[in-house]
Length: 284
Ligand SMILES: Nc1ncnc2c1ncn2[C@@H]1O[C@H](COP(=O)(O)OP(=O)(O)OP(=O)(O)O)[C@@H](O)[C@H]1O
Image (cartoon, rainbow, N blue to C red; front, top):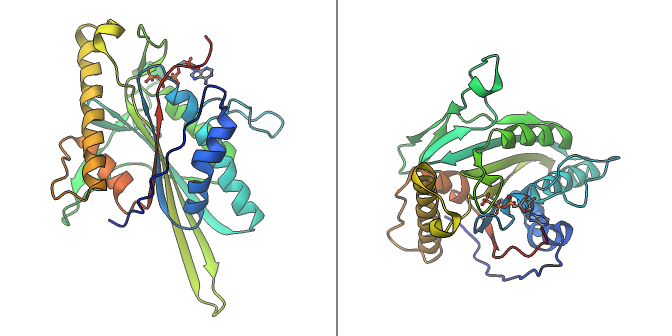
């Protein structure tokens, strides 16, 4: 794996708004994606600290402008289209959106079952297959071609609405699954010698479920088991990242969760940003 290891610690205080977090922590890696690199941004932290708010925030444009509360994903999408349009680039773009819940993967953008009532519809399950080269591929994940930021915002809103959430003691709308929203960008370029070159970049935006102190959250039975699974998967992900960074011989890909991460996030990864959201600073 060719991963650039650049350790850069940035700390944002309670006054930091969505714009400054995007500009300082994420915009530079979006520029790398536009140059053909594969980059991943994780939002990691305790339940209720603002991961989904930081990643998604508000998405709807008002008078062609993103609202101040727009998070990393809408800002990245807007940034990507702005740069490509300004360069008059010959490009194509595809997005996918997957959810990992209790070791089960589903596609948040594909609905196979066309039942009349939304609550009866099933998410399309997808599976992991060995690729014969020691890696795994995600089989059945839809990649949807998009032509404008609003195409992406609509898909994102639809997909987010289908994510598993629950009302817990620590967050009224707590995400109970991990999600990976990916944007694949192909840009065709012609070199001075008239050779055609394709720059293929990929941006993975990961909103992890929150770690949870079960005693504090008051979760019982199914909800407590679910919180236990979330904590276990986050612990394993931390170990996997440490093993990859330290080039360990053994990488503990124990769960499907980490195998998905390894294929879609770490495979050919060039840059990774982990946003660790520590504390609930905002009012309310
Ligand atoms: N910086 C902020 N300013 C204002 N409100 C915020 C901010 N961050 C989070 N919130 C609000 O706090 C609540 C919890 O945030 P959010 O759902 O993003 O947390 P989370 O870390 O994703 O939690 P979980 O892990 O349980 O899903 C939401 O109502 C969200 O709108």
